[in-house]
Structure formats: C-alpha cells, structure tokens
Image (cartoon, rainbow, N blue to C red; front, side):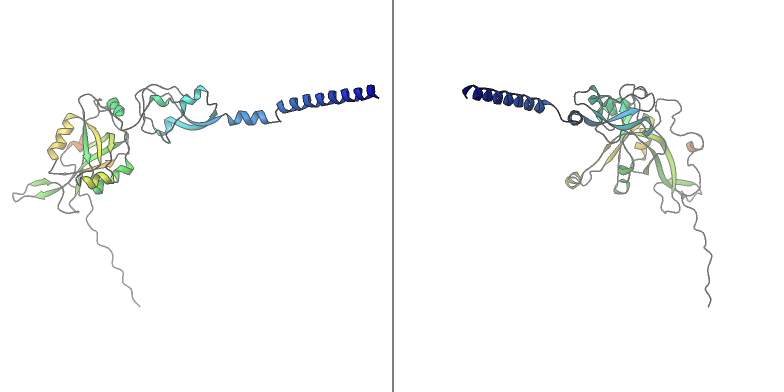
Length: 279
C-alpha cells in the first residue's frame, strides 16, 4: 500500500508540474493579431508637405507648389522632423531649395510677417511703408495676407477753375466726379499689424497697418500726397513684382499720364424707360 501510494503521489506531482509549464508557455504566447495591434499603437499620424515641383531657395510658396498628406510613422522615425503644424503654407517662404516629391523641412519655412521674413525679402535701399487702415479699409485684413500683393490707387476728381483750367482735387466732391488713378501695382505686403480691441480702447488713434515694400521714389510720392489726398488699397489679382528688376517701374504707358483719362469712375445716370399700367 505504501509503495502504490508513493507512485500515485509522484504522478500527481508530475502532472502538476506539466500543467504549470503549459500555463507559463500559454501566458507568454501572444494572441493572434496582438502583435499587429501593439505595432499599430506605437505609430503616430503626422502631416507632411510634399513638393509638387523643384522649389528654389528664397521663394514664396503658392498653393500648387506643395501638397499636404497624412502619414503614419513611428515616434522614433526620422520622418518625425517633417511634421507640419500649419494648416496652410501659402505665402510662406523657403530658406533652402527642395526637390520635387521631397518633404518640406519645417525649420526651412519662414512665416509671413515675421522679422525673418521681412529681412529675407526687403531689398536694400527700399523701405517698409505703413498704411494705416480706417474702419472702411478693415476688409483688407480678411482678404490680404503677408506675402500677397496690393494695388495702390489715388481717388481724385477734376475741378474747373475760373480761368478754364482743370485742377485735381482728392477726394472728389461728388461720387459722379470720382476717378481712380493707379499709383503702384503688385506691391508686396511684408507684414500685417493688427490692433486688438484692448489696444483700441487704450488709444483711439490706434489702427491696424499693412507694411508694404516701396522704393525711395514711391515713398516720396506718397509722402507728398499725405494729408492732401485719399489713397486706396486693393488686393491685387497678380503676384508681387521684384522691385529690383528693370521692368518694375511705378507705371508705364498710358498709366504714367496724369490723369489716366477724363472718364468718371461711375457712368452718368441713364434715363430709364417709363412703364405705364393701364386697366
């Protein structure tokens, strides 16, 4: 009896040991698909900007120069350095060249309106002219961005003197006599200074400003008009011109004449046909 009891006891110990081994092995064996789920949890989605063409250094980005894409990468991946935090890079500047289909490096991007942006594009000898915006001009803050361009016009009218000669007055005395003369076109806005509500309450004269790059001769023209004329800014439909090029004169052709034409800004009111209703 003692011998058989010993054998049974040994078999129980052996069976328990085998069970423990199977439990340890099953605990260390990952469930199907667990490795894929763990690997997926270690990835991170980032936004990258892909160059759609070869981009030169010191260039301004346009909408069709790049494309934003979402990619999944490991947090330790070198591609993390290309993570773009901005929703739109239009009008941003590039410090270095980027080849087609390559990622844009965030450290090579210069934000429009920043000090680096101004220093990057202001031509030596040119100046930043601050156009102060009246309440009626604040629409420009929503329609013009740093890096875009504006057209500068003079609103004026013609006054008949007693001797028969015409004199230019700005602004005109009536809407019918108002004319617009282009002074400068496609001038780059290098920065926008917005005045918040608190600043307006502290100083009633505080206004938002557009800082536009001008040449010395253009600055003198505008300074001569200050206080005596109404100057208007409009968003330009074309990109800024390079003020260093010879073809960037203030005006050319018929626009260089003064005034541009004798045609009023608004047409003469036309008589409307009378409709009679008869029963």
